[in-house]
Image (cartoon, rainbow, N blue to C red; front, side):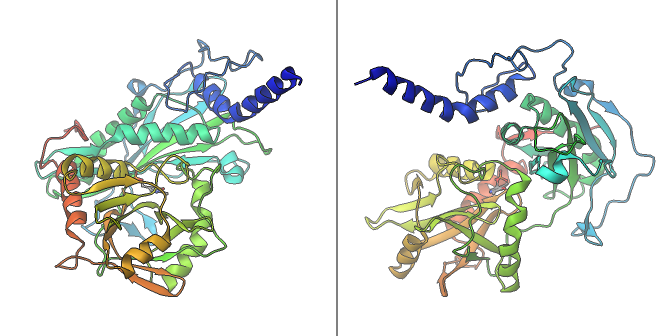
Length: 434
Ligand SMILES: *Cc1c(COP(=O)(O)O)cnc(C)c1O
């Protein structure tokens, strides 16, 4: 009997399930915004009067228009093409952007200032509790001379999602996009010169918890910074990318975890397996999940397979987003969209869970067509081999050995957008300072 007992159990259950989404919503509401970028439960505001979602007049929003400029007095030389680091240190441009935040007063004035070391107390939250998240996107010097970012709105939105996931502050994503443009407006003309069309830089927005108080708690101070660096071209390794599947006793991310967020805590622990795979001649780990061996990601890139299904359909398959195991890559999203728009007649685009056994079976039945990894760093990188539990799966690399025809077609379409060979809304032009 006791319908009330049943009702209250259900209610308690709902509250528990709501804990994460309410926490995320409260975090977003702190700066008086609700931009719907978190997963938007309609949980009522908490009644403690502190984070009730009402903007306090003295808590400032992130505002890119307030940016101040302090130019370097020691401009550095641009390295020759192909040089990305010196003594193991990444080469960055002359300037960086920093913006400090505190729970009490919100966002301070964004500053463009000389690139250089940060000052942190040894007790800073990020150094102990991994309160760090980041983004990665490239700036491209087009063949038409213009400088472009690729879908920076997607990176800014994901940056917000990651930040809020680890109790770092929220912000209006469009302001971060403006800051990215501001940095490239200043450093782009020199560091990505018009004399080098077809080259790129790598932008790294980062957020860290800086409060200098030990204790496991959400930091009340944070720093957002953006740097621009060089990075090698990694999308066409000789002989293709070779993957080693993850060991049975290691997973990159798990359901209920944070694999979908670009938080530093996802990467450090993956290096052990990656280092071992590299020592054995492989480029990246193909991260499998659960005893079923679901294919998830290749290193820090999304992973794609082209095969003929048992029914004879040509399919482009990749892991889904709904279980929140993998990162929602901007490259992944763009590949899927272009494939659906432009190859929809020839291939079926499928986002579903699929296992390494299915890939091995497709291989042994001659149905495996192509494979590639996709992400900003590796761009669209053909995969030529997967090593799994003592067996090698070899994947066709096309006539010229540079990747299969679909892989190369998708890659070229994206390149055309990035380097301005075609006008496309995904390519956002930087208005450079002269
Ligand atoms: C950054 C990243 C990707 C690629 O995302 P893009 O937005 O395409 O650069 C894929 N997987 C992981 C785990 C990543 O960290």
